[in-house]
Image 1 (cartoon, rainbow, N blue to C red):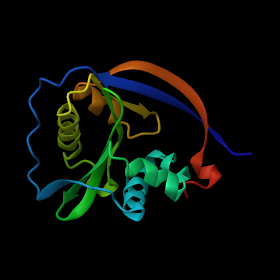
Image 2 (cartoon, helix red, strand yellow):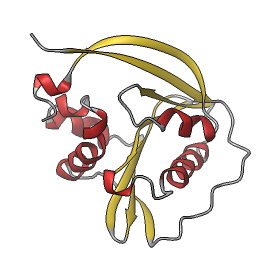
Image 3 (cartoon, rainbow, N blue to C red):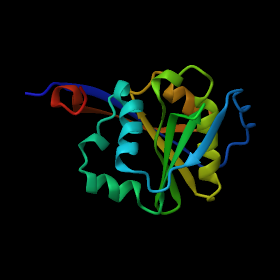
Image 4 (cartoon, rainbow, N blue to C red):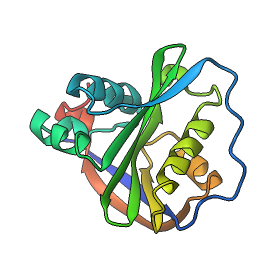
Length: 178
């Protein structure tokens, strides 16, 4: 029998563009680029490299055709943060839900955490989402995510609107994460 984890999931939203100033661009050689129709191997690399420590498992459970249908959809946008030419993080905007935009995934590769990149990149993603003039933008995080995730989202204008606790199968015991 697979081990279970009790996960507290917090849902956050913002219903207007942030009025706070955009954080200063970090003083590193960096670029932000949209990955248009990324290869499955590149997407899986980003997802796994960023999400392994935080037990991201949902996309690992998808077949190639299921994953391709999501990440190659015209209303799903994947942006990659590069530092010194190296992929340092990615964010995914899902615009398939009418006038709402979900920040479906967001994170940094472990070697780039703590370098003042996350706040800048998150705000860049928020500004990108608001360029479409949605009614709201939303995200969810859980107790398995980086401990600063929820505070980072709130610092940039997201407000919690719902919290639930779920028992999930531990992806380490199911073999999805090594």
